[in-house]
Image 1 (cartoon, helix red, strand yellow):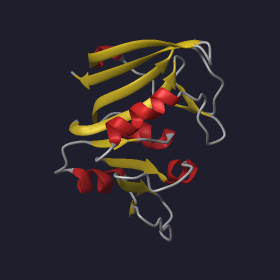
Image 2 (cartoon, rainbow, N blue to C red):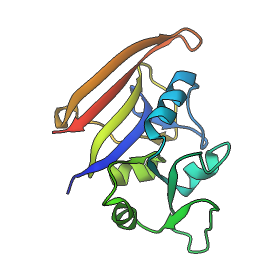
Image 3 (cartoon, rainbow, N blue to C red):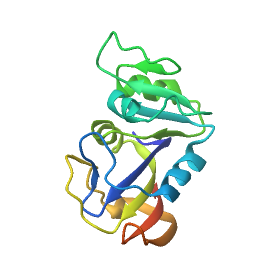
Length: 164
């Protein structure tokens, strides 16, 4: 079942790489600003490692839901759940909730998400975590902006996609 209010926001390389050693693969300040602008005032859903990788948490003006399989996990300022279904239940009446990682969480939510907010870096990266391969025929592009990042010397695009 597709949940139209579940959105994934992710920065991926063209080979679907998203992370290495529990860190991002590239630093794009404008992408971090975009992430903040899009998620501000909304619910963000993540796995425990993603939460712990944040420089400071909880992020301001966002409700945090952390999915963990460790019954003793307590994250001050966050709600803890133990399954994807439990997270979906918590946000069923919300306008939009954002899945922010990591890899395992993206894989589990990808089949049910109604929207993708992608930052697509037009370059391959070596990684140990990958996003599921996107079949673009399943998605309708609703917005696109293309950029060149001089500091990193690569092109990237912001894509908003809605499930067909």
